[in-house]
Length: 142
Image (cartoon, rainbow, N blue to C red):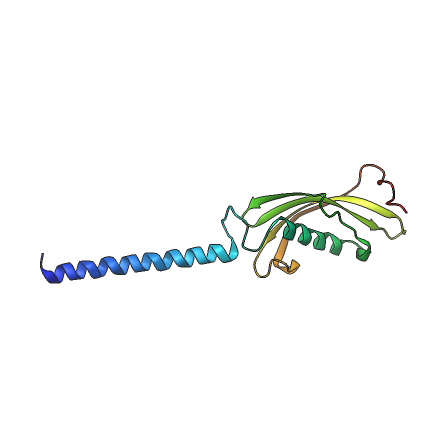
């Protein structure tokens, strides 16, 4: 091989390597910023953030939403992949008749993009609210 051929081959190899690195950086940056196709939650999202967002969505669904009270830690959380989370918990609230009620809720929500703390950056995929199956705990009706 001539010296010129070796030089051309070296330039081609270096160019291909640089292009591969740039493509890998772009793909990883998109996955990191949006969390798409990821087995890990997007950056800045944890169990508590998803629970608080679920509370905001449930609160918005109530007519007298300022009466909504949620438990501090009585909930179940699961990360389903692709920035989708499921939350199961309950909400105590006062209905239109002035009676304190408790409803269980289950929600699957997906983080879309932007600030994780902004409810508008989330999309509810499934939302179910059911009345609490038994009487309220003592002190709730007071």
